[in-house]
Image 1 (spheres, helix red, strand yellow):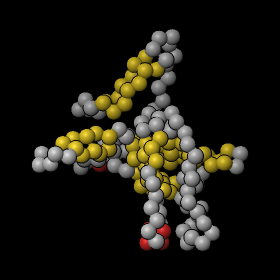
Image 2 (cartoon, rainbow, N blue to C red):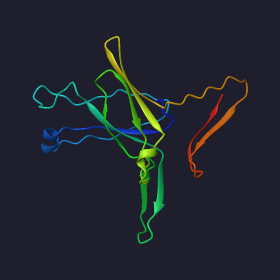
Image 3 (cartoon, rainbow, N blue to C red):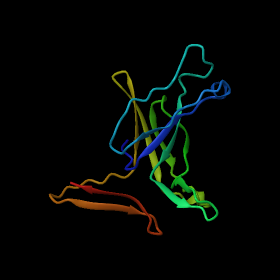
Length: 158
């Protein structure tokens, strides 16, 4: 994960597997971390094993309290990315659409998904299209905020 955010992902099941009652568990992956992606496959399944997809949600989550409830609600800033390919080699760009914004045509934020074949192993990397590098000898504090001042990401670069 090189997106600058925590990401959450799960395997997208085809209709046949869903009807059988199969479920996919959501995994979380912190920025800068990596993990093996295991997709459940069998020779008897009817879905195409060469067209694997995941759903990706980008953190952070925000909590708020409902006026008429005592429960705290939790949601992501962005809508989930559906049908993110993890099998076909290539570079894919997905728009990060705000969860509660009705004007989705003006999204300028994107997430890149790179699928590479390296020494017979498929590597799926989720990246931000923005790279910030500190070339000074001092620590550099960086923050990304929305137009209305909400903090989306911050880090200290050494």
